[in-house]
Image 1 (cartoon, helix red, strand yellow):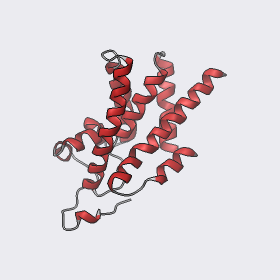
Image 2 (cartoon, one colour):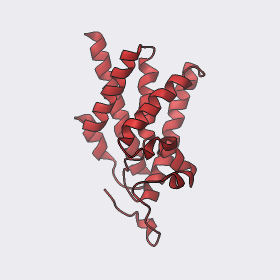
Image 3 (cartoon, rainbow, N blue to C red):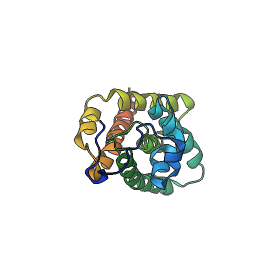
Image 4 (cartoon, helix red, strand yellow):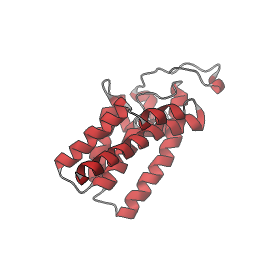
Length: 178
């Protein structure tokens, strides 16, 4: 949905497909665009999710469990700011190039499901991508709950991915139970 933000009247229109220059123009853009993973011309959400998976495999080796939890919480708050600002600068409520929400969701999933083997990690990734892309049930509800610009819209960008992450973890818990 492309709508100019009311406070952006008189400003130049930003492209709906961001560039490296746009990403580097503001720290919020670099964060929201997943340090470039959101610039992928095809499936930026999948590329951002892969970046989240790979980066978590590295980060978990250097952080204790409390530090990992703190990183996820801080990344949510910083991401809320970054997604809010970047969406406003792009003049799009929920741009596909914003992938910080996928990254934080993958970190949350792997915080709870690791340690597991590659097959378990791949299953978690695939389940998350399913819930994020198909948006069944609660994910569709969450996706529609907070739309628009400003802090509410920025929260909405991240919220539906957190719901998809919880659906993923619930599905994994059910699979482990059976």
